[in-house]
Image (cartoon, rainbow, N blue to C red; front, top):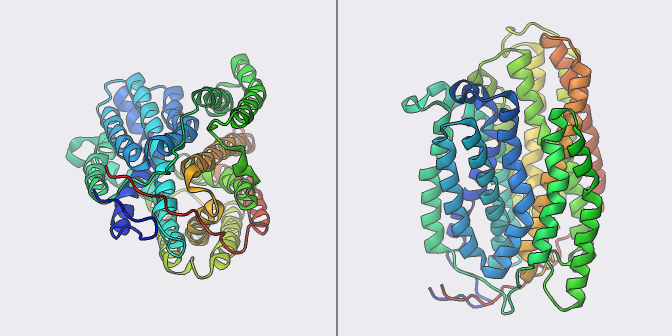
Length: 490
């Protein structure tokens, strides 16, 4: 393959981007698609409630723990190479999930899926950073944001539709087998159109940093993902308490590696970039609430209203349509008016969450009132506002945070961003889940679930207001991005 000049972009970069975006799309879909399939998995595999929780938690855990390492693997060995290997690993893990003969086998396969997704996600962000010139990078990030934003909703809707259709009698297994033809098509196009772009002085893999980062993240995420569901047993408290010393040891080791002239897993210099540092705070506040919205509303639809998976999935159609519309508009307008999409989108998110909370708190009604009930109309309006804001913000937020990051550390920076996102989402699920359970108590029925959901989603409103205020301190104009590095033939 002929390498591109450092100043002449690859003419096939947009085709390659489209193929590469298949990977994060499938990764996000597979996180959300399982929610509506849990009852079917329980019947088919005889899974316990704890195992069903682990089926979701282990995917997120594997993703969050290894995403920084995945980013550094791309920096060290080439983003294209690691991306293609990660894609094959993800597809193999998807097949294992679909063929799972038992609940424990399913859990192991879900963990492998999460690890593979962690390898993939930062490669796409890094490829965008190094393959596209400054004037095209916001639009490329906008397409990435469109993919991630719509995948969250597609995961919920697709799960309900496929379970209803019961394709070839496969039931929930079809949700994961569908990854194979889509993923292989994306893999083949990416293999033909993406070229390797490396720094002339590639980073070395910091094995000590990998080990310490993994220990620190496990100490945080295992208790948050599993311990709280089991009533905070002593082991979970001890593990969570050890997370601060583990994080301190990791940061100390990274600074020492930097002083010795080595390549730390996370370069401390990244946090001297004001836009990047402030952007991580915005990401943390944004995903603290965003990660639990669909979960809370899915519980309300299924347990509170007793709706079947298809009808529950159709409730999220306004969210999906609005998200896609705003993301599509952002692909053309985000480069010209990024502040409008960022701050206007956050305002729309706050307004949408407010409407959802009011609809849940004030509009009572029977479970079988249908989609024309005041509560459903209010939820649809709120979800549309929220979706429009989500679609407007996601494309701009990633490009703003990663602007000015050196190409040599693009994968590592993307990995840290994704880790903050995952940790915030896990913390949000714990916090908002606790509020929901406390508000519900021993009550039952649609109104009890609605009011509990309203209290829980009030936390989402607060976290999104914080994200909107923090975003005011982000750079108004994207800094000049990294220069394209010479490409090496593959």
